Amino acid sequence: MTALILHGGAGARRERNYDAEVAHMRQVVEAMRPRLDAGESALDVATAAVVMLEDSGLYVAGKGASPNLAGAYELDASLMDGSTKRAGSVAALQGFRNPVVAARAVMERTPHRLLAGPGAERFARELGFEARELLTPQAQEIYEAWLADASSVGPQNIDPLLEEHHDTVGSLALDADGVLAGACSTSGMRFKTPGRVGDSPIPGHGLWVHPEFGACVATGSGELMMGSSTAFLAVEEMRRGATTAAALRTAIERTAEEQVLGPKDQV
Image 1 (tube, rainbow, N blue to C red):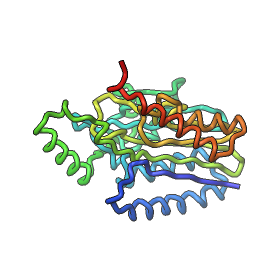
Image 2 (cartoon, one colour; image 1 turned 90 degrees about the horizontal axis):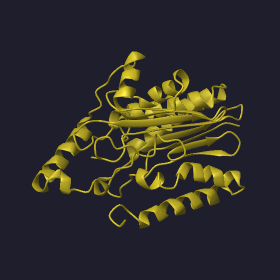
Image 3 (tube, rainbow, N blue to C red; image 1 turned 135 degrees about the vertical axis):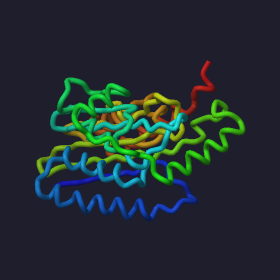
Image 4 (cartoon, one colour; image 1 turned 60 degrees about the vertical axis):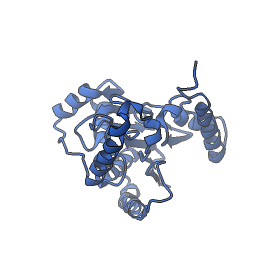
Protein backbone atom coordinates (compact mmCIF):
# COMPACT_ATOMS: atom_id res chain seq x y z
CA MET A 1 0.00 0.00 0.00
CA THR A 2 1.17 3.52 -0.78
CA ALA A 3 -0.24 6.85 0.37
CA LEU A 4 0.27 10.58 -0.04
CA ILE A 5 -1.12 13.45 2.05
CA LEU A 6 -0.77 17.13 1.17
CA HIS A 7 -1.77 20.35 2.84
CA GLY A 8 -1.66 23.93 1.63
CA GLY A 9 -1.80 25.70 4.95
CA ALA A 10 -4.21 26.90 7.62
CA GLY A 11 -4.70 30.35 6.14
CA ALA A 12 -8.02 29.75 4.42
CA ARG A 13 -10.38 32.74 4.41
CA ARG A 14 -14.11 32.64 3.77
CA GLU A 15 -14.06 35.40 1.18
CA ARG A 16 -11.34 33.87 -0.98
CA ASN A 17 -11.82 31.38 -3.82
CA TYR A 18 -9.43 28.42 -3.62
CA ASP A 19 -10.32 26.65 -6.87
CA ALA A 20 -6.81 27.16 -8.25
CA GLU A 21 -5.18 25.67 -5.15
CA VAL A 22 -7.53 22.68 -5.10
CA ALA A 23 -6.91 21.99 -8.79
CA HIS A 24 -3.18 22.30 -8.31
CA MET A 25 -3.13 19.90 -5.38
CA ARG A 26 -4.96 17.37 -7.51
CA GLN A 27 -2.23 17.81 -10.14
CA VAL A 28 0.44 17.18 -7.51
CA VAL A 29 -1.30 14.00 -6.34
CA GLU A 30 -1.68 12.74 -9.90
CA ALA A 31 1.98 13.47 -10.60
CA MET A 32 3.17 11.66 -7.46
CA ARG A 33 0.85 8.63 -7.67
CA PRO A 34 2.73 6.81 -10.48
CA ARG A 35 6.04 7.53 -8.79
CA LEU A 36 4.90 5.81 -5.61
CA ASP A 37 3.36 2.97 -7.60
CA ALA A 38 6.68 2.52 -9.43
CA GLY A 39 8.49 2.00 -6.13
CA GLU A 40 10.05 5.43 -5.65
CA SER A 41 11.02 6.23 -2.07
CA ALA A 42 8.72 8.13 0.26
CA LEU A 43 11.44 10.73 0.80
CA ASP A 44 11.81 11.40 -2.92
CA VAL A 45 8.06 11.71 -3.41
CA ALA A 46 7.48 13.91 -0.35
CA THR A 47 10.28 16.21 -1.47
CA ALA A 48 9.08 16.35 -5.08
CA ALA A 49 5.53 17.13 -3.98
CA VAL A 50 6.69 20.08 -1.89
CA VAL A 51 8.86 21.33 -4.76
CA MET A 52 5.74 21.42 -6.96
CA LEU A 53 3.89 23.36 -4.26
CA GLU A 54 6.80 25.79 -3.85
CA ASP A 55 7.03 26.37 -7.60
CA SER A 56 3.33 27.06 -8.10
CA GLY A 57 3.19 30.54 -6.58
CA LEU A 58 -0.16 29.63 -5.01
CA TYR A 59 0.93 29.16 -1.40
CA VAL A 60 3.00 31.09 1.11
CA ALA A 61 6.08 29.02 0.32
CA GLY A 62 8.77 29.20 -2.34
CA LYS A 63 7.64 31.32 -5.26
CA GLY A 64 4.52 32.46 -3.43
CA ALA A 65 6.31 33.53 -0.27
CA SER A 66 5.30 36.53 1.81
CA PRO A 67 7.83 39.20 2.81
CA ASN A 68 8.87 40.12 6.31
CA LEU A 69 8.64 43.60 7.82
CA ALA A 70 11.66 44.71 5.81
CA GLY A 71 10.31 43.38 2.51
CA ALA A 72 12.78 40.47 2.41
CA TYR A 73 11.89 36.83 1.85
CA GLU A 74 13.11 34.46 4.55
CA LEU A 75 12.14 30.85 3.91
CA ASP A 76 11.98 27.84 6.25
CA ALA A 77 11.79 24.19 5.23
CA SER A 78 12.44 20.72 6.60
CA LEU A 79 12.13 17.06 5.74
CA MET A 80 12.45 13.81 7.62
CA ASP A 81 13.15 10.25 6.52
CA GLY A 82 11.26 7.67 8.54
CA SER A 83 13.60 4.85 7.57
CA THR A 84 16.50 6.48 9.40
CA LYS A 85 14.83 9.29 11.44
CA ARG A 86 17.34 11.62 9.81
CA ALA A 87 16.17 15.19 9.24
CA GLY A 88 17.38 18.30 7.47
CA SER A 89 16.23 21.91 7.74
CA VAL A 90 16.94 25.44 6.62
CA ALA A 91 15.67 28.60 8.32
CA ALA A 92 15.55 32.24 7.23
CA LEU A 93 17.02 31.25 3.86
CA GLN A 94 16.95 34.08 1.32
CA GLY A 95 17.14 34.02 -2.46
CA PHE A 96 16.28 30.41 -3.28
CA ARG A 97 12.94 29.21 -4.57
CA ASN A 98 13.09 25.63 -3.29
CA PRO A 99 14.27 25.64 0.32
CA VAL A 100 13.08 22.05 0.75
CA VAL A 101 15.83 20.96 -1.68
CA ALA A 102 18.39 22.84 0.40
CA ALA A 103 16.98 21.18 3.53
CA ARG A 104 17.51 17.76 1.98
CA ALA A 105 21.09 18.69 1.13
CA VAL A 106 21.65 19.64 4.77
CA MET A 107 20.48 16.16 5.76
CA GLU A 108 22.48 14.29 3.14
CA ARG A 109 25.65 16.36 2.81
CA THR A 110 26.37 17.72 6.29
CA PRO A 111 26.56 16.35 9.84
CA HIS A 112 23.96 18.94 10.87
CA ARG A 113 20.17 19.08 11.04
CA LEU A 114 19.63 22.80 10.59
CA LEU A 115 21.38 25.65 8.80
CA ALA A 116 20.07 29.20 9.08
CA GLY A 117 20.37 32.67 7.58
CA PRO A 118 23.58 33.62 5.77
CA GLY A 119 25.12 30.24 6.52
CA ALA A 120 22.25 28.45 4.81
CA GLU A 121 22.51 30.83 1.84
CA ARG A 122 26.25 30.25 1.52
CA PHE A 123 25.70 26.49 1.67
CA ALA A 124 23.06 26.64 -1.08
CA ARG A 125 25.30 28.74 -3.31
CA GLU A 126 28.28 26.44 -2.79
CA LEU A 127 26.15 23.52 -3.98
CA GLY A 128 25.20 25.44 -7.10
CA PHE A 129 21.51 25.89 -6.33
CA GLU A 130 20.05 28.53 -8.57
CA ALA A 131 19.09 31.81 -6.94
CA ARG A 132 15.57 32.86 -7.89
CA GLU A 133 13.40 35.95 -7.69
CA LEU A 134 10.56 35.09 -5.33
CA LEU A 135 8.41 38.16 -5.66
CA THR A 136 5.08 37.50 -7.39
CA PRO A 137 2.71 40.28 -8.52
CA GLN A 138 0.20 39.16 -5.89
CA ALA A 139 2.77 39.26 -3.09
CA GLN A 140 4.02 42.67 -4.24
CA GLU A 141 0.48 44.05 -4.27
CA ILE A 142 -0.24 42.72 -0.77
CA TYR A 143 3.03 44.06 0.61
CA GLU A 144 2.55 47.53 -0.91
CA ALA A 145 -1.01 47.71 0.46
CA TRP A 146 0.26 46.75 3.90
CA LEU A 147 3.02 49.36 3.70
CA ALA A 148 0.45 52.00 2.85
CA ASP A 149 -1.62 51.05 5.89
CA ALA A 150 1.42 50.79 8.13
CA SER A 151 2.75 54.19 7.11
CA SER A 152 -0.16 55.92 8.82
CA VAL A 153 0.51 54.42 12.26
CA GLY A 154 4.07 53.12 11.95
CA PRO A 155 4.98 49.47 11.37
CA GLN A 156 6.11 49.14 14.98
CA ASN A 157 2.51 49.70 16.09
CA ILE A 158 1.07 46.87 14.03
CA ASP A 159 0.88 43.47 15.68
CA PRO A 160 2.23 40.95 13.14
CA LEU A 161 -0.07 38.30 14.64
CA LEU A 162 -3.00 40.29 13.22
CA GLU A 163 -1.48 39.84 9.77
CA GLU A 164 -0.95 36.10 10.01
CA HIS A 165 -1.29 34.07 6.86
CA HIS A 166 -0.43 30.41 7.34
CA ASP A 167 -0.25 28.87 3.88
CA THR A 168 2.64 26.63 4.83
CA VAL A 169 2.77 23.57 2.57
CA GLY A 170 3.38 20.02 3.70
CA SER A 171 3.55 16.50 2.39
CA LEU A 172 3.63 13.03 3.94
CA ALA A 173 4.29 9.90 1.90
CA LEU A 174 4.18 6.15 2.50
CA ASP A 175 6.05 4.10 -0.08
CA ALA A 176 5.69 0.50 -1.24
CA ASP A 177 8.31 -0.64 1.28
CA GLY A 178 6.25 0.76 4.15
CA VAL A 179 8.61 3.70 4.75
CA LEU A 180 7.21 7.05 5.84
CA ALA A 181 8.69 10.46 5.04
CA GLY A 182 7.58 14.06 5.26
CA ALA A 183 8.50 17.55 4.11
CA CYS A 184 7.26 21.09 4.66
CA SER A 185 8.05 24.61 3.47
CA THR A 186 6.96 28.15 4.34
CA SER A 187 7.91 31.79 4.56
CA GLY A 188 6.11 31.99 7.88
CA MET A 189 3.68 34.63 9.04
CA ARG A 190 3.20 37.59 6.77
CA PHE A 191 5.24 40.70 7.71
CA LYS A 192 7.07 38.87 10.46
CA THR A 193 10.00 40.43 12.29
CA PRO A 194 13.21 39.83 10.30
CA GLY A 195 14.96 36.75 11.60
CA ARG A 196 11.79 35.17 12.97
CA VAL A 197 11.75 31.38 12.58
CA GLY A 198 8.62 29.31 13.13
CA ASP A 199 7.84 25.66 13.69
CA SER A 200 8.36 24.32 10.17
CA PRO A 201 12.16 23.85 10.22
CA ILE A 202 12.29 22.57 13.81
CA PRO A 203 12.00 18.76 14.04
CA GLY A 204 9.17 17.76 16.34
CA HIS A 205 7.30 21.03 16.07
CA GLY A 206 6.22 21.42 12.43
CA LEU A 207 7.16 17.93 11.24
CA TRP A 208 7.81 14.55 12.85
CA VAL A 209 8.09 11.08 11.38
CA HIS A 210 8.30 7.85 13.37
CA PRO A 211 9.40 4.78 11.39
CA GLU A 212 6.67 2.57 12.88
CA PHE A 213 3.80 4.59 14.29
CA GLY A 214 3.07 7.52 12.02
CA ALA A 215 3.93 10.99 10.77
CA CYS A 216 2.57 14.50 11.19
CA VAL A 217 3.14 17.75 9.32
CA ALA A 218 1.67 20.89 10.86
CA THR A 219 0.43 24.31 9.82
CA GLY A 220 -0.76 27.27 11.84
CA SER A 221 0.80 29.54 14.43
CA GLY A 222 4.43 28.53 14.81
CA GLU A 223 4.70 30.28 18.15
CA LEU A 224 1.96 28.08 19.56
CA MET A 225 3.29 24.86 18.06
CA MET A 226 6.80 25.52 19.33
CA GLY A 227 5.30 25.72 22.81
CA SER A 228 3.79 22.25 22.61
CA SER A 229 5.89 20.27 20.05
CA THR A 230 2.69 19.67 18.11
CA ALA A 231 3.92 17.25 15.44
CA PHE A 232 5.91 15.14 17.88
CA LEU A 233 3.01 15.08 20.33
CA ALA A 234 0.57 13.80 17.71
CA VAL A 235 2.87 10.96 16.67
CA GLU A 236 3.80 10.17 20.27
CA GLU A 237 0.11 9.78 21.10
CA MET A 238 -0.19 7.27 18.24
CA ARG A 239 2.86 5.43 19.55
CA ARG A 240 1.07 5.14 22.88
CA GLY A 241 -1.90 3.49 21.19
CA ALA A 242 -4.25 6.38 20.37
CA THR A 243 -6.15 6.37 17.12
CA THR A 244 -5.08 8.93 14.54
CA ALA A 245 -8.17 11.05 15.23
CA ALA A 246 -7.66 10.95 19.00
CA ALA A 247 -3.95 11.72 18.69
CA LEU A 248 -4.59 14.75 16.50
CA ARG A 249 -7.33 15.98 18.82
CA THR A 250 -4.96 15.79 21.79
CA ALA A 251 -2.20 17.61 19.90
CA ILE A 252 -4.56 20.36 18.75
CA GLU A 253 -6.09 20.82 22.20
CA ARG A 254 -2.71 21.08 23.89
CA THR A 255 -1.46 23.48 21.23
CA ALA A 256 -4.57 25.62 21.69
CA GLU A 257 -3.77 25.86 25.39
CA GLU A 258 -0.66 27.84 24.43
CA GLN A 259 -2.99 30.62 23.25
CA VAL A 260 -4.14 31.21 26.82
CA LEU A 261 -0.82 32.80 27.77
CA GLY A 262 0.25 34.89 24.84
CA PRO A 263 3.25 37.24 25.00
CA LYS A 264 1.08 40.19 26.07
CA ASP A 265 -0.43 38.22 28.97
CA GLN A 266 2.77 36.92 30.50
CA VAL A 267 4.27 38.66 33.52
